[in-house]
Image (cartoon, rainbow, N blue to C red; front, side, top):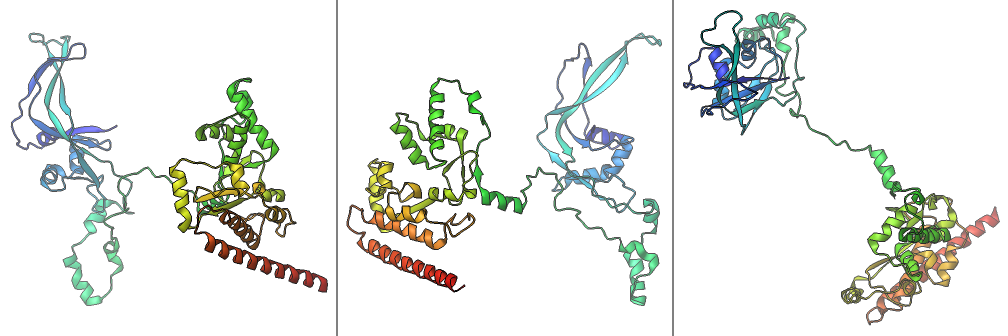
Length: 441
């Protein structure tokens, strides 16, 4: 609860002469309403943040009428409220002015009807609007920053001495006496960098953030048991069953491939529409070897070594050859997914992601089905080593550059082919050393 103290009340309590206040009697309150003319004089109000014992005590904590008038004339126009004005170490609470403030100062009084002076005479409740409250002081700062002395404040105040009386003792002795301990109570001008409370959105722990970033799982929890929410026999039921059947065939899909499989079955869905059906049956990772691939719910490719055949493989078009991509996109042309996976056409997109499982290449299919040398799935390379993954990437690059329809790819094709053969020889040398070392043991 906050009490309101008007400037008029503050000055009247201290008998300070101000501008003449013209009160316009509004009359007796009947049925909760009164009528009359609103006054033109303006006053200000103070929303006091506490329960003072009296108006006089409230004025004392605000510094009296002189300090209030001084604050009103200052450039900052801020009021200082000391909850313990007798304590020199009391830390003030700052009141900021709020404008505009469309309120009125109302004076309620009881009046007896004329000619009825007996004790049983009926009293009428009258209301006078004293003035228009155009400004209000609010104390929104935190009031719990205080320094309370161990002894009574009044005793401490009496012991406090001026620096001029103590300075000669420093020159004489050079040290502070134990009896002058009050000189060591040095209060900081600010107890906190923030005086106004704020709503803070706390950041999660850095370890939790790293773990979340490492996993990067995106899935929707709504409609887990979608059979209960979709009526059987409807169009949505048909689409959802078709999506679930594809995930039963294999647990990991790239969206373009899945969309083309649905289209071949006569089910055509837009990019936004298909997401609704995919989230009911699958999820995806934001990073790692299966980034942005749709994975069947309940299946974790990081725990199944056989999932290595579904890993991601990117092909990036060299910058000098991207004019072909720009012209293809501008014309609105789009290749079939099977033609891209079969290396029969050159991609229109500057960067295209594939699944190793879908690439029609004997060498790639032979390499991804070889026994693994790693026992865990890493975020960077998945189930393959860095060397094997680089060889597969170069193989994809060579196959696509060999079908580039325009001139200009010959030098890139030659460089990629040489690099691929060099890596193959390096891998063979490493394997021979491992075999020889095993034979010696």
